[in-house]
Image (tube, rainbow, N blue to C red; front, side, top):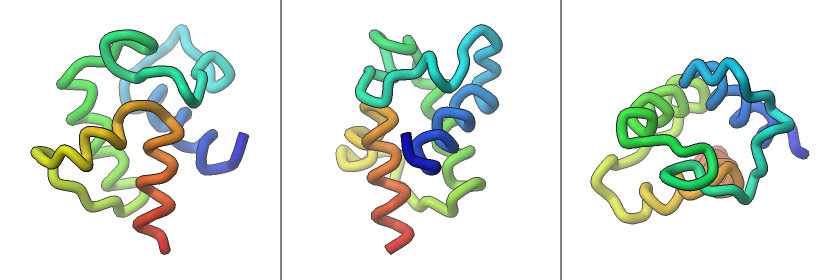
Length: 85
């Protein structure tokens, strides 16, 4: 697990107050919404704001491109890495 992968998992846990979940419980390929972690649209907004604050990520909430990045942790890692380059 990369540092960025770990940071994003921790950000998800902290931002969404997932008290009974640890970083090791989150599979980087597992879906974040509906199945998998079972997050919803409110969680997506909170997570998007947290990513902007923590990593300076810029995104358009209505963009299909942005929506695909919220598929799983690996996708979020790619989003952050693409904007760091």
